[in-house]
Each structure stands twice: as structure tokens, then as C-alpha cells.
Length: 397
Image (tube, rainbow, N blue to C red; front, side):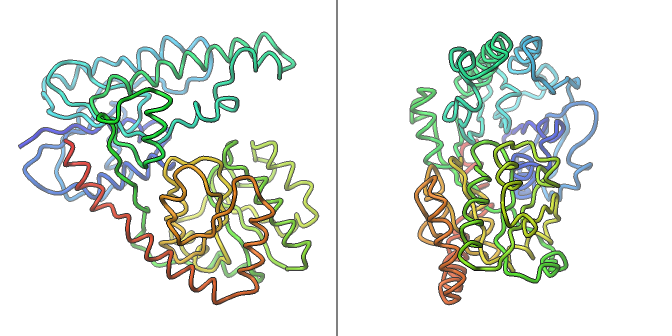
């Protein structure tokens, strides 16, 4: 029997409704009921397993630590960040876990002898797209009007991510979610391959039946996007492709869903927002905001296609999720996306939104191709399963 500790604090600091939260919950719900002892390390404000209604068959014990502020965004927070990534895990010592699994690298790992530490490696996007996430002081000086403030913040972000990424270097093993992610850890953090293992993710499925009420409100054929609006998603490319399709005479709608897509006024993505404001077809671009899993399944099922214009993905889970929900996928060919999509999606050159438009037009004129993509997508999605993921993960522990 082994004692395995999972750090669940990420579920208590705002990640519960994001990708990392859905990932953690899926892991917990697929943990087998066996002889191993599961410990869940949490802040002392609540029990996230009960609060989030996580459906577990395995028994567990909560180990609590003092709640800390994790809303950090200015140079004065560097000391707090240092304390988080070098957290001592004192309440956990008495339990003597054999293995410790960290889902959120910003929260540190134990560094006493006798515990095997594993950190989940999602991506290194801040290093890959550094001008958007970690600009150098010279870049900040050159591209800002408030130069001194921008340089100070550039130094802050560089120091912050230096502290964060050292957690990966201290871990015994990093479980990467794709080969592309593992390669980036080798190239950018210089971590040896023997400390990296690849375990592909699986789509987060729901037991509820698709709810078509929201999808049925739209009488026109539509293309669909659900996700975030940060710089790498390039929402503006979806808008540009949509404009081209409409300009060719096809009367379709564009549906945008996600926490950050409640309305045009609440969009923080300046470039994407501007693209929508300038679109001559703005009246047919609809903001759905948060939607339930059942509504999401219904929207996928009815969509002409899921359009995904991300410039980098650690795994490309939205691609697999759409395929599992019988929705054709049109996406850029980069990073881990080919691993997720296989030959079941329409892949185009990154940044070529005109090619995205061409593929949308092709689906509109060829229903048989759409049916073929749905079949291939379903088959591709079956490659990724949570049972397989958990079996492989537990094999590392």
C-alpha cells in the first residue's frame, strides 16, 4: 500500500471552472478504489471535493494548511510568490506520503527526502510567446508609453516565472500532456528527457444528454467557438475567416461561448473586440458566455464546425472534445494540435485565416465531407480516455 498525496489547492483559488479544474476533477473521479491511501492537500477554508460535488468512489483524507492570498499581480507580491513556491508543507510531514502530485506548479512541491514528487506539465506558453506574457525590459521600453512602469513590470514577470519554473526543476518527474509539451520542457527549461513522461489528456465528458434549447434559437447554420480570449487564441482570425465566408454570400452565424465571452463590452481581448466591432456582419456574431455541459454538447452537435485558431496548445483538448461531441473541427496546424487531431480535422497553416474560410465554405457545400469528419473525429477521440490516463499516471507513483 502506498500513500499518495494530491494537491487540490488549485480548486480553491479560482481554477475550478477552468481547464486545470476540470482536469483535476476528472482525475479524482477516475481514481480507483484500491489499497492505496489518498491524501488531499487543501487550504483550510473548505473541502473542494464536497463543495464541487466531485463524484468519487475512492476514499480519501483531507490534510489542511493555512489559507494564503494567491491573487498576485504586482512587484510587491514577489515575496508572497516566493513563500508559495517554497511552501514547507508542514501539515503533510506527519503523514509521510510516498508520492506527491502537484497539479499547479505555482504552488510548489515538498523538498524533504523520501517523497517522490510529480508535477503536471501543461505548457510553457509564457516562454514560447514571451512578448505577450514575459516581455523583456528592452521590449517593454520600446513598445510602451509609460516606459518606467512597463520596465518594472517586465522585471517582475521575469522574476515571477523564474520562481515558478524552478518548481519543475525541483520535481522528480514531470507528467507532460503531449509530446509537444515535453519537447518544450527539454528545449526551454533544459530538463532531461528521462525526467519527462507523456500522458495525453482525455475529453471531459458529461453524463447528461445534450440540451438543444440554446442551439435551436439560431435558425441559420453556425460555426462555433468555446474557450478563452488570451493572445494565443487569436479570436480575430475567427472573425476574419467568418467575414470572408459571409462576403462569399453564405448566410451563417458565429457563436462564441466561454466565461470571457459574455458580451462585446466585457471582452478584454482588444484585438478580437476590435475585429468584431468592425465586422459588417456583427449582428450575426452572438455572445453566449458561460454555458452548461449539456448546452455545450447540443451546440457542438448542431454546429457546422468548431473553429479553433490558437497559435499554441499544450494538448489541444478543445479539438478532442469537439470530436467526441460529433462536431467537425477546423484548426491551425501547430504545437500539439496534430497529436490531438490526427487525420480527423481540417488542418491549415497557422495564421492563414483565409484557408480557414475556405474550409468553412467547403463544409457548407459538401455535407458528405462533414459526415466523414464526424465519423473520423469520433474514432480519434476514443484514443484518449481517462481510464487510460489514470492507469498510466498511477504507474508513475
